[in-house]
Length: 343
Image (cartoon, rainbow, N blue to C red; front, side, top):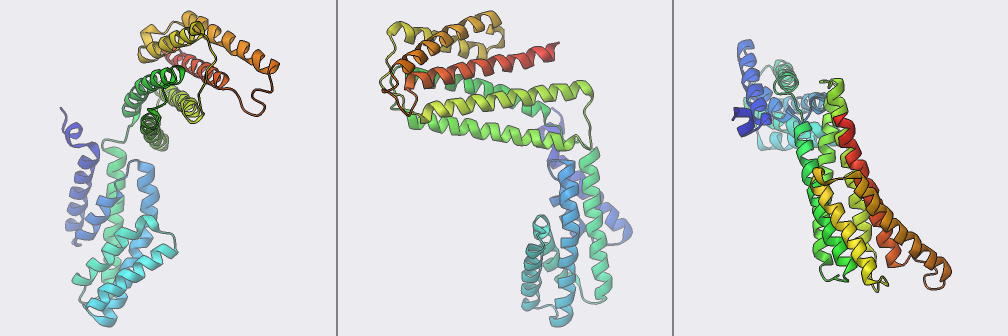
């Protein structure tokens, strides 16, 4: 196992950035502590974030250094100096919306008080220099050493979300078709967990898009990544339809036993094909979709004939079939992405 796989690429990059930053500061003859602090907090999930936040942290650090120099020249190395430097740095950064640089600026401000005894102007520009070194080294390390690549993690997450989604489809449809609603709270909790996993993967996808500005993917890699994004989008929509099903009252279903069995078999086939791509047969999938669609239109005709029964709301049977048909179509689109990638 490679060392960066064992302890994490971000930890490795932080260590490299700290080493190079300290080495460069010592070579110049500047105290490395402030540069090292800056380097540590500047390693971000993407190069884009490192640059964006670095542009905020530099002026913030300048503000903190200025306040440290100002108050130590007025009050010396005292408790009041630490207090005023910290408070004014935080307040100014907050007012100027330099939120990403607030922590490093405050740390720089209070740490400077201990080491400044004279030559205040030189100390101020030295702090700016060390901050620049920390920002520059950490950004370059993030760009060229183990550059962020989230595609494998996204791919694994999509597979895991797909399997979780299949399990939730089976569980929820079985519950609503057999009038077993006593576990609704548990199903909602599982759907919330699934939603969090989807959001986390969407966040990683956003990181990868940002990274593409500095490490562009080749055409085939870009296509593969786009297919992953499309798959994730389809899974997000399936989650949406499952949530609709859970949040609608499903009671007193009027289906015959034969109709329920037909729908349950369709759900079973849907779940199996989503869990195992080798079981997905487009012809079988289309046939099962046609069967439940026919039931959908039969129920729809009954509604139009007996409009007084549900004058304002859809009946539960129509809700179930609509959500199931929608999920069927989304699963077909999910596997269309796999076929396009194979081509």
